[in-house]
Image (cartoon, rainbow, N blue to C red; front, side, top):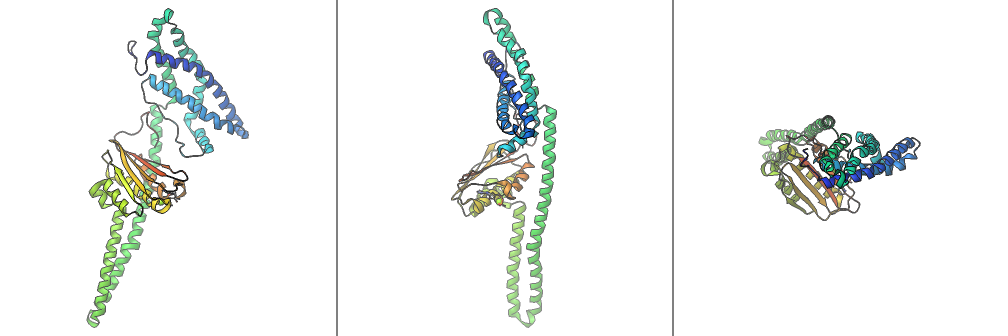
Amino acid sequence: MTTGRIAGAGRLRMTGYAVLQVLLSVLALVLFIVDVVAVVLSVIVVGIPILLLSVPATRWLVDLHRRMYARVLAEPVPTPYQSTAGTSALERLRIAGADPMSWRDLGWLLSALPLALTTSLVVLILFVPVVTGIAWWYGVGPIMAARSRIDRWFLAFGTTERLEQRVETLTETRNQSLDHAAAELRRIERDLHDGAQARLAGLGMTLGMAAELVDRDPDAARRMLAEARQTSSAALGDLRDVVHGIHPPVLADRGLKAAIEALALDLAVPVEVTGQAAATLAAPVESAAYFTVAECLANVAKHAGASRAWVELGGTSDLLSVVVGDDGHGGADPSSGSGMRGVARRLAAFDGTMRVSSPTGGPTLVTLEVPCDSSSPRTTPSSGRG
Ligand SMILES: Nc1ncnc2c1ncn2[C@@H]1O[C@H](COP(=O)(O)OP(=O)(O)O)[C@@H](O)[C@H]1O
Ligand SMILES: [Mg+2]
């Protein structure tokens, strides 16, 4: 940062931040004391209700400072916490306790007061216009940048930590992908064994009998041949289903939207398909998205009691987003079945996520998002967790 030009936030805004930081440093110290006392008291349970209030308060305060330092350094605001979406208050507390960022927050709270005094306060003192106006003019940028770097050191993960988290995520999703692939192979094997293979065996027997009867009883032989023909077309149907379950031909031929429209036509509930994927989709991503939508639409028909449903395709050139909604009675819960969890795991292999919003009384909205630019692994500070 040069003395003449200041990136991110102007001098007055930075001075405003300095005022705020000095004022809030008192609150930070209070929160530090409350947090520590509550953690100690949680051993005898009484601390838990305090933590239920002090942890969100701490995160609010700390996030405010994350936004300020990001503004000063002209960086994206990090979102370093582990996701707690859709969990109960106690569960959120448990996740927060296991989150390494919570402990860094605590360290930062303790340092906020001395930090504010040594950096922000200097800015404030320099701001007295006549005496030290020039010092303020040249000093505010570098001083606030220094303070912001210290905040960043506490409040955002460094490159190494982000890479560690990334490796952890990849290991987990790789194992899930292997499990998923093995389960898929077993399913295909079972489908072939119980379907086409059984029918073809029956077909062989019928044809054998027809061959024996063809001289003695041509009429019976003809009936058997007709039966054999039916069995062969049923076997063909089974094979088509298996192929469809691996990679639907309509998906390969005509793309995601057309394949979803074909799904929608088969559903008892009317489904409106709108939008278009802006991203170019790799075949495995497209297929994962297709089967997720297929599962969601099957759920609409099975569980929702809906009068209509809709699928909205969208996203950007490097993100596919699909929303599947219905106007049914709500109450969808991925943890109570296997269908949604299965497709979510399949999406996770591509860093994709699935969010479910399904309050009692509806509507149910399932949002899936899959990044499509495989050349940029998500280790940038602005990225969320998959
Ligand atoms: N669109 C929906 N509307 C209402 N309830 C739903 C919907 N989708 C799923 N559910 C509920 O969530 C549960 C989990 O769904 P899923 O994981 O697909 O399992 P399942 O194998 O039962 O379909 C379902 O058993 C159902 O009770
Ligand atoms: Mg299901």
